[in-house]
Amino acid sequence: MKKWALVLEGGGAKGAYQVGAYFALMEMGFDFSKIVGTSIGAFNGAMFAQGDAYECFKAWKSLDFSAFENELQEIERDENFLTKIVEKLRQHDIRIPELTRSPYPLFKLVDQFIDEDKLRESDVDFGICTVNVSDLKVDRLFKEDIEKGLLKDYIIASCYLPVFKLQRLHGKYFIDGGFASPAPMEMIDDDTDIVLVRLSKTPLKNIERANYIIKPSHDLGSSLGFDKNRADDLIKLGYFDAFRAVKGLRGEEYYIMPLDEEESLKYIYRLLKDKINESENKLARTIFEDYAPKLAEDLEMSENFRYDELLYKLLEKEGNRKKIDRFRVYTVEEFMREIENVN
Image (cartoon, rainbow, N blue to C red; front, side, top):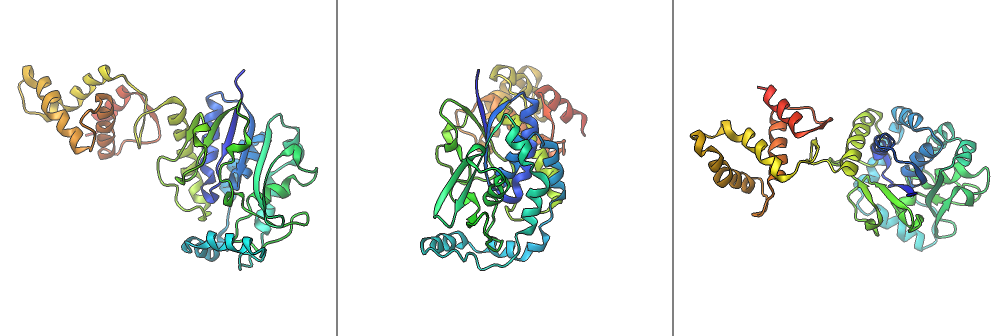
C-alpha cells in the first residue's frame, strides 16, 4: 500500500492557505502516515495530525497579531534581517534580535489549540524543524523523539519568529525553523510519497522528491501580515490550488478540467466564429490558419503552440473580461456556457 507524507512549508501569515489545501486533499482521499512542517507549517501540521483540521480553520479566523504591527513591518522592510541573525549566531550571540515583544500570544495560541495527548495518540507520525540557538544546530524531530510534556514547546520553537524576545524553552533558546529548512522533506523516507504544500516561490532543495507540489497561483501577500480577515481568501485559494495540482486542472487563474487537443478545436471554433467576418465555408480555415496563430503570438505562446493550451488562455481571457467566478472547477463546456450567458 502506498504511503503518503504531507510536508508543510513555513510562511507565517500565509499559513491559512495550507488549511484549504488540506481540506481538498482529504476530499480527494489522501491518508497521510506522516505530517511534517516548519514554522506555521508545524502548527498547522500538528492540528491536522491530531485530527482537528476544522479547529485549525477556526484558529486562523481568530488570529490577531496587530500588537506586533510595527515590529513585523520593521522586519519586512529590512532586507538584511536574516543576514544579521545568521551573523549573530556565528558569533554565538543569542541576544537576537533587538526586539522586546513578549512571545505570550504565540504561547497562548499553541496552548489553546494543540492537544499533546491527542497528538501523541494519533496514528500520524508528526514532526517539526526548528533552529536550536543554544546548541547552534538544527533540530528535526518526530513526536517520539520529544520528551513527554515538551511537544508544545517544540511546536512553539519551530514557530518562534524573531519578532519575539528570546525566551528559554526547557532551558534552551530556539528560533523559527524556516531559517534552516523551510520545508523539511529530508525528514521523509525514500519509500514514502510526498505532497508538498508551498507558501513561497523561494527555490527549495530536493523539490523533485515531491510527487505533488501544491503552490499558490496568486501572490499570498506578506508572511508577516497576520490579518484574520485574509483567512477566508487564502483558505479558498489553497483548496482550489490543491485540486489543480492533484487533478491536473488547467488554466492559470481559473480551474479547468483538461481536454485533449483534438477536442479543443471545436471549442476554439465556437469561441471565435462570431468574431470573424467571413463566409461559413471559409470560416474554419481562416480561424485555424490565420486567426489562431495570430492570437497565440499576441498571448506570447511559442510557434509550436498546442491548440488545447490556446483554448485555456482564450477562455481565461474571456472569463476575466466577463468577470466569471474564479473559484469553481469547470469543464470546458461549463466554462463556455458561462461565457455565452454573460453579455
